[in-house]
Image (tube, rainbow, N blue to C red; front, side, top):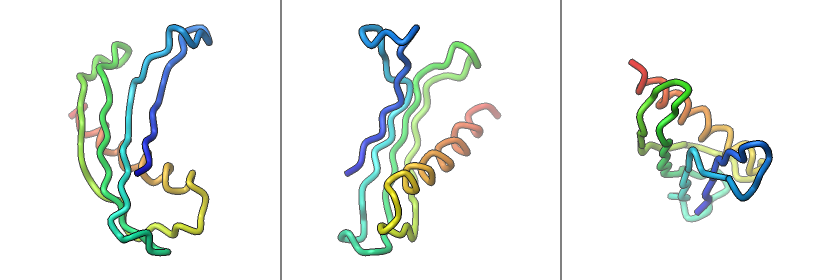
Length: 89
């Protein structure tokens, strides 16, 4: 499983760091070269946009595992951003 944590460090101060979003990504394809993933994301309350906390589950399909891990993170981030947009409607 891959876990991506997005943190804010106010003023660059690690001691004041707090997570604002988390993504858990689990391979469903027995680590095949081209794999499908289950995705679970959550985001805390955002006082800037006044969006309440939310979470969602979904999938990323047909990801080529020979690419950088950042390619998978990008797909998850794009999906999560689209889901976040739905919370504003």
